[in-house]
Amino acid sequence: ETGVTQTPRHLVMGMTNKKSLKCEQHLGHNAMYWYKQSAKKPLELMFVYNFKEQTENNSVPSRFSPECPNSSHLFLHLHTLQPEDSALYLCASSQDLDYRGETQYFGPGTRLLVL
Amino acid sequence: AQSVAQPEDQVNVAEGNPLTVKCTYSVSGNPYLFWYVQYPNRGLQFLLKYITGDNLVKGSYGFEAEFNKSQTSFHLKKPSALVSDSALYFCAVMAGSARQLTFGSGTQLTVLP
Image (cartoon, rainbow over all chains, first blue to last red):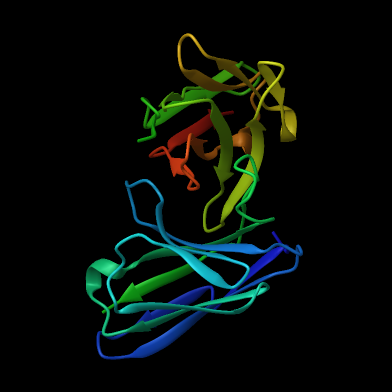
């Protein structure tokens, strides 16, 4: 799990707060992903970046704002969240998007609770 | 469109017995199939994948999976279960023009001592 790290591991925030989740990968990959994992639901892909460029935004509300300053770092900026946004947020990386059989490697996640 | 089904939310097996976690898929084109495992309060760990070639794929921790094209299945198996195998297991697929993994809803495996 040390290949992809995420901070913080736990976060409690009010609906009016602004916070950021950080992801860092040490695998030399070029693609990075944000997923949302809610109880009893399949993983939901939120955003995809390839070589720092956003390639996917799966109709995610604007209160979630991603940032990818380089291929090793990915952020998810949060503001005015709703209680239903409480979930485990997972970051993943893969070599790039050119080869569809590429394995994605996941971080440990940030457990977010919105009050 | 691509989809994955894990028909069992929960699978219980006795330690030492063989285990099977089921996965079926629906895609256009040739599928790329993956299994991941998630332990409590952890991220997903890659177990194995099928890309092409031999239908029996061997992965980490003694797990294997068999690709069956006619039945559109990719069941995860292990000959002898360990208590430490207790976790949440996810099947995922990518196929055709899709560049995203589609995950199943997960199967909670409990291995009883």
